[in-house]
Image 1 (cartoon, rainbow, N blue to C red):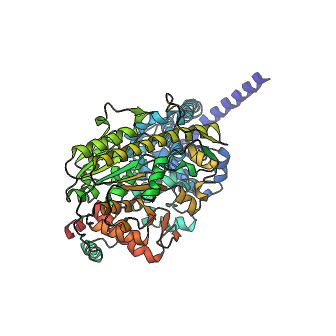
Image 2: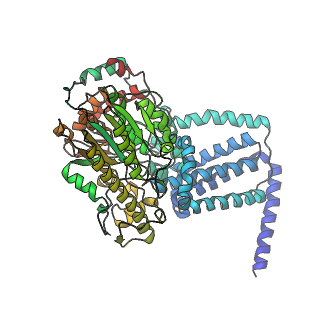
Image 3: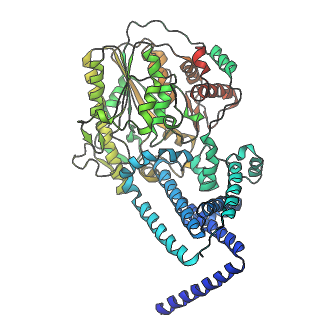
Length: 629
């Protein structure tokens, strides 16, 4: 029976191919266009099925036919580009499909790991992807196998069904001209009548929630909408007179000389957080017992991070410069894309006040371009992975304890007051069950979760336990040195605990999809505890202890206050801003009266515009604010 069914199917395919070849000969141009249109339809259906992890969901999305046709048009242009470039219909369909499959699978991986879709500027981070890929191999092995199956299947399908069709050189040139004319109009649609047309058919760029933008508008249209954000345009009103006005309204107050210049140490601990807030989990012991003890005795609070699960460099950027990633393209990495020249920052400011400024990060100095950027920010020395040759490796990375030892040695060896900015690495995600395979777990966790979730949280908590012990070692040994010292210890972001927020969802810490999160949910997923330990009496403690919940860019004010150092213009501005809007971030804004806003109300717009002008001046403009100061 099966033999006859297969024979009949093959006979039908053979007749179809013969008829198809005859049609091609009779009207080749029409057939050529029809093939590309049909291929574009299938490609869009395939990439949306991958993005949504469901063919049914992709088919239901087709009901939004206006958005669907726009995505098909984009794939049609991509296919034409490959035809123009390669001159062969078969090769064009093959390579365009492979290209789209790689993009859609990369988009899926990023959504699962970081909660964000693929952005155009992610292609500038390929060196870092290659470096981290082996560590995530177990997480994406299924996806890599799927890609291989797609490539092999596509090869045979094209070989069987697509005719061999060559395109003449003049037609190829004409195609390129058409593509070059159309693509810029789509990328910069906001400055053309297309914007009105999009609004008329209810197509909206959901820039404040990138993952929803990709789902709502389709992967390709969402991606195209973000391309313009690669370019940072001069804001309205930017000129020397406006910067001078902002400077006049934010006169820098000189502080009185302090009788001591303390060492100031900032430890940005990789993925440090308090996992005991996760519901329905029981811990055999408190994994951050020392940190909690310090919370009770010293200044503490919560920082709202600009990122989740990764992109630590953006947290560093906000802390060290007082600038905000809110004014940069969503998902961009400030260090890698926008810090291209010296800019005023905490290290350069402290250096003029007699400090020796040292950065420590036990990973490759080229990662996020830290080696270059730290120089632009004013650091005197950077200890990277190459300076930890004999260090203990815990799991996959240099142990946090080794970073504490390096900090202590720098303090001992430096005669002048030290500013040390250390970023740890040990507890970087993902958190496979075998990371600490030769070590008995110090914390036992129980809960009604899947075995995968329990393994993830167990590995993460072990790293957290080690970070807590490293903090204890650091504080006790710094105290012995008997030099006035302040230590700010905090995490950079919440940890990535499994695909699609697996542990967070299973414990009930958050519910539903990201688009369904409330303002409280978004705040929970960005809030990081911090402590400020000192072994001397702080001259302006009330000033430092002013806010319990602040955005990352306001931490810099605390650093300068600890040393009683006068602000520059940007930190004078942020000092006033934090008293009005202590939380100023993407999707999360909280004013001094604890009112929460997704978008700032009109009362705060002028402040926001001044902040944007100052940031543009320092990063992209002529740095008028430097000469005004």
